[in-house]
Length: 425
Image 1 (tube, rainbow, N blue to C red):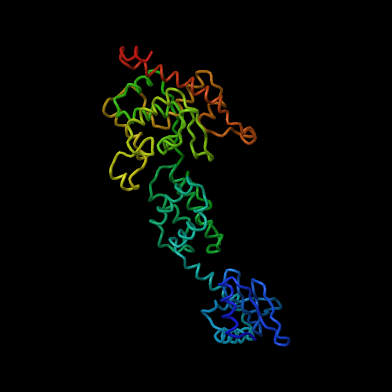
Image 2: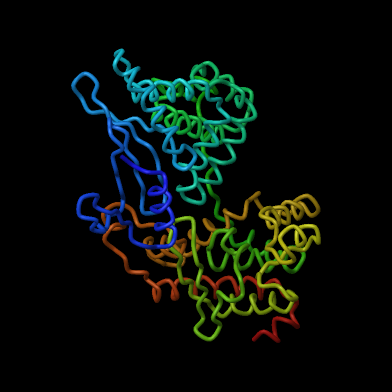
């Protein structure tokens, strides 16, 4: 039989990092006990103690010929005398044919049956979403907010495929964003099925084509022609925006990679920009050409006391991010759109991302091999080649970007007044 003083002694020993001991009643010998500890009080009641100091009462019994365990509660919340009383009550129920462990599991399952979609979303965020990639967290997180706003109060076990379809229709997002919304809902209710809250996923069988019609044609990336590039280089833009456009063209990076770039990522002596991470996963070292270095140094002279290459301009954004922050994600795109509205240039409408396809297409036109252009854009090579070819093609990329940079410099020089052109020579 256990004693209250003995339990307190064991708890104190674990807290102090001391060894657990017990005195042999016959020999008075002090015996050291192992952790985790399990000591019987008789009739199946067992005191357990983990290495971390968590103690609990467990009732061990047999039901239908099989060994069972039922956790009565934690110690010291439940003391020795209370644990014995509850164990007697449970043993009386067991003698009448009850199975308390099974009953507890059923009660827990019944409680889950009452979960709302909002509770399910919270559980999914904590257990699943937190372990996914950053871009997935952003896209799923955005759509979890939509699901919660439309269905948060719904009981999970009552959600039907019709509820999912209605939600998609009411959100009225683009086809692509609706597809991501459906994917998010599918993963959310897959989590519910995994927890046995529902027997089947209500999203299974829903086809977005049937809900919203055929998917619209995917917008093709365009390649700005040389004449369009000349007009772009001569564009009447704020100088920081004009330099940002030049850098996007010359480096072929994603706009977010340039937007979040910090000065400590650039080594002008070695002519390398070390991008710490990218959409495709690991970071990449980008060769810096002479034209890129010149544009960067001009930007550096325009930035004051900021770690970012393109620092925020609005005071409200600076305050929001603690005094220093990169420009808004939409700044470069908005600058391009403002140029269109104010000046109506003879240039096909394009987005910052189209500058990457422009760079790729022109490098191909200049004779750069396809695989090198893909590496310049930090794309993974397809198929088996992409699995086994881990070469970074740094020198090949340097040559390609230099060739492309020289071409852009020629275009920029052609846009300068005659006097400035002479000075550049």
